Each structure stands twice: as structure tokens, then as C-alpha cells.
Length: 215
Image (cartoon, rainbow, N blue to C red; front, side, top):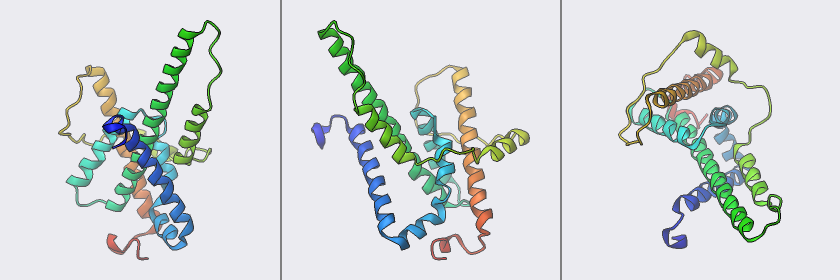
């Protein structure tokens, strides 16, 4: 109810980032919970790298694809895909907060430039704060891309998963833009499926999925 309902998206995104930060603190203070969470979270760096550099709209389309997959399939690792959605929501919130802060900063600079003929002042610390939020939320190590092997396998196999239809309505786009968006979404889904296989193969899971966090 902040600002009488104005800027709901902004405050919702801030809430997502705040809860994500509090969860990290709780994991550190509770060793048992931290170990349990790491059963799946050990792939979070790979998941984040898939989302890095994507636009908000691209991530939103991917979110719809994942939700449709979770609702329409039974032979999947639900815990894995819910973890992907958790990181995706955090990344989407971070992206939109950064865009909103940049938009406000540009408006402030425009107002200052109209009131003074002097050159605009240097960037304010607000952008530095946004960069810190992005770095803290993503927690991506600067290293060689561990997904390159999966990307090469995708190109060699020429695999193209079926695009799931969504009930949401989108603004009309050109055929070229539509095909480009579909291609990107197919690549995202393929990479995430490869990570799901990686999770199972590295742990040689033989027990039912319900026992994943009890081991």
C-alpha cells in the first residue's frame, strides 16, 4: 500500500530482492538449512549465467514457458524447476529495479540541465548502489563459461523443443522479431533441461524425488 498503490511493480521488485537477501542470511546462520538448500542450489551459478544479459521481456517469456512446463508435465524434477523460477524472479526484479533507477536518474539530469546552462554534474552514487544490488543478487563468478559444452552439444544435435503455447496475450510483433524470440526461448529451455540432467547425473539419484532433501 505504499504510495497509495502507485509504483506497485517497483515496490514488489524491492520486496523480492529484500526477501532474497534475508533468505541468504538465514542460510548462513542455519548450517543445516544451508546444506539442505545446496542440494539443488549448487547449480545456481550456471542458472544465473543463462539469465545474464537477457532483457526483462525475454526473461518474462521464459518464465511463462517454465510455468507451462511445470503445470503440464509430471515426469520432471519439480524441485529443480522451482529453484530455477526462484532465481529467475530475483533476476527479473533486479533488472527492473536497475532500469527504473536509471530512468529516474535521467529525468533528474534533464531537469537539472533545463535549470542551468552549466555542464551536467557527474553521475550520482545511486547507479553505484544499483550495480552493487545486481552483483549481490547474481553472485556470478568471473570464470570460463561452464555451459559451453552444453551449448556445443545443442548446436551439433540441432535439437528444437516444441514451443509451448501461452494463454497470455502479447503485443503484435513482426514475423522476424517473433521468430527471433521463439529461437531464444528454445535455447533457454534447452540449456535449463541440460542443467536438470546434470543435476541428476552428478548425484546418481536412485531414490524417489521426495527423498532428495532427506538424504
